[in-house]
Length: 558
Image (cartoon, rainbow, N blue to C red; front, top):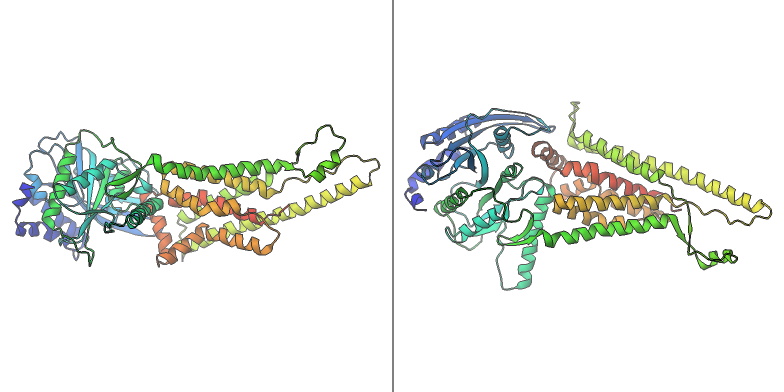
């Protein structure tokens, strides 16, 4: 903090003035940044990269520099994603870890290319090429990512911490920065970019905390990182993003460059004292405030109960598909029997339900392959691929329902013939055979069992995504069944189509006022560039179960 005070306002302007040259070409801007790093004594270099996805082609030039600490052996390093207070750090002889400064080009693809080149051990789902790094340091222990629009004053600093596929940094990373912001460099911190006043109304404070937690769960569920910090988490590097924002009409103290610099310097010093990776605190948590969290032991039981409800209903249907309860009138036929059984055994066929489930997963895999493959024909767009995928799945539903209807009519005719023959046979003392269990009961059992498996398993990997899927499917999957009323079947089918992936994409397009192609392109880029699980989970797991449920409500009742 004392070292920062020696930087005059003119010196700070000189350091940051060249960093906002947005009018410059990328290569020229990167070289200008490298010269600025070199002038203050850092070893700097640039890295060019190019990547081609199924929706776009991107290229850029990254700038990075390394400050080799006097007390470091080069085996450990910290990352700062912007060259703030660099001149001050050069004079610091107390640093025991190298500091790597990275100014990435583009959005997330620039830092992604730099991290891949730095570690060099990741498989690719897209065509890419990046220049090899000329300068290296040791294993990265932690990282701070900065996101400040200019060099003005701000109302508050927001902390973004969600990573790829819902990964989270160690809670001590957030707590350390929060403690520094509250004591060493008094700065108001908040989650994300929402400033919520604390009032004396307990109910209102509770609702505000719930909103912040739901925002976090939304970011986790989609799997896309909320900042460049999320890319570090894939490499087991704890990282957060500090975001400066100015909320109009918010009456509070404003924080300038000096106060923010104090926060960054103290945070870097705290991370410099680490002897090992942060591991003492939680890696699984939900935050309702900067200093308030919910641990995994409290939020996991509800989603497990949600999965158990599917299991119990599936077991009930499985027993019902084989053991048919008998009414008293039916038991009257067994007056001569020594013991009257409360149920009778009937045949259970799993061929049709198993075939429907298998074909549904094949259709889901085909849709996933169709969406992620670049065929190269004119007019190829993500929207056209989604329409083709929906067509494939619709054909599956129609084929399955038609086959089931034909099978139902054949079995009905066979049952009528057996009943007729039994009545015409003299001295026949046997009751007619019970009809086999309807296929929809067994198919619904499979749907519920698969839903329970998905929700409970996914909750350990991405809790927010598991809860989102469970809330969407729990009511229709538990209550929907075939009906003799055509209108009811149509309503159930429309609802199931509405919660299918095409329906959810249309809903997201309407909710966020975005073009459908933009929504699909964002999902595809997340999978191809960042490796998010949203697309494969939806296509290969969620959609097949949804298709099987749609077939189920269209099957014959008996």
